[in-house]
Image 1 (tube, helix red, strand yellow):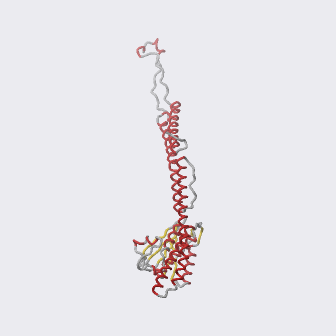
Image 2 (image 1 turned 90 degrees about the horizontal axis):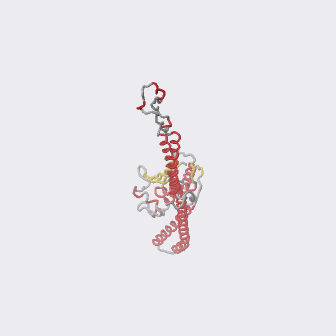
Image 3 (image 1 turned 180 degrees about the horizontal axis):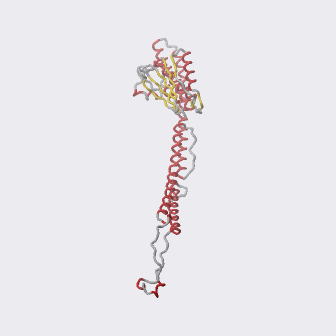
Length: 353
């Protein structure tokens, strides 16, 4: 039972019914116009009166001729073609009506996965499509509110914890025992570093930057020169045409990747690789490297490897997390590979859009 003519079921059922009626109407009109002629009237005399008598010669019926081939429009193929065309058109419109809401929902979900502040889904179409669009928009609003609430809570906690930590750092300075003083100072420095990294991570997540045409090669050369001025061993090679991207996110990503290489390897080699489809920035180091089964884990917040990459190196485990988040905001990704001969290669892969 059709509850409303505004539903998708009613529209598809009505369209199919109209197509069937139209096909039968076309077939009926064809038969009325091009159908076979009525049968001829019976002859005035039957065969028993057929006599060779010349007196009845003028009463003979005219000779019968065999029927000729029917005209092109006189065969049954024409109404069948009419019905087939009508049903094909109706099926095409029905399939399009079914796929349009699903396609709109899929595109909106893809935009939402890239940006929580993407515009809401337009509420239009049949009843089922409008209901799904309203539910999707409500879900997007709730996800945005939960993420914002989580960010505000973490930012407030990080900010409020800095005050007691600063007081503790001042009191630790009064401890006279060198070993205890060093241990407590290291713990406090780690906690403050974690808070600073958390605030940086949250601030970058809240940043919304519009893409623009940017000189990637100039940025890489500038970062290389700055590192060399500070006495770090950083080299760059390669050429790259300007790329439409987010400059602040790109700078943040490269800064964290280069700092990671300098912290664990003491040197970094940056290689620019440009192609018509993508741009790859490879940061190569000759440090201890990362095992293949742990490469994805280093992108988790506050994750630090044991052994060569430990707390004494000065990291808090947020650099690679911030770098990958920035890469994905630009529509690319950050991957880890093993350097030939030992070490780690970080690949920033960005599409040309």
